[in-house]
Length: 254
Image (cartoon, rainbow, N blue to C red; front, side, top):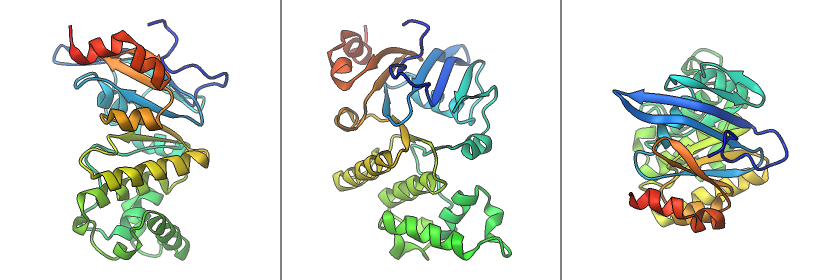
């Protein structure tokens, strides 16, 4: 790989520009010299075999894990030590492999908290009619309105994934990072996820998606970045990635 971040193929500056990320765990290099770029208005896929560093890179970019070295720039601003709250305020949100919801709060309250990024918004007079209206609009869009008053713990696994996705979108972000959005959900739910991704993309939202379902990735994402042993090895269109022998070698091993 050259020093140019993988994924830098558009004439416009990248929305997310990650350079030289490195992180080790007990001598194991989970991410090493990882440089990627996500162009605005794309649905970029980030794939690789198990242990290739995808989720570690996600966690560093969004501030849930500190890097040993490297640089993260989002929307032209350098973030030496990314912080989840500051990244959220800047317009970068994410989901997790296992949906992160507040099980004892109602479905509606989960979205109010996500919109305000503060559980204290539920107390006193800080929840306005506008807050509730915005949350209900989002729940209706995701076909969850009938569950608004239920505790999130009552939702099915797939519905929790949808709620997690809705929570990532409610603040009108510029970039949404999805970590395994289709993992463990049925084909109907996968179609629902895909529809919402395409709809939001049409409205101008940029996506970076980690996903193991290759059919989903090849159908939805362009470009695609392939990680192996913590570093990008290939970046290009679905056709280019599928035709590159380095990708097959990475998945099958030496």
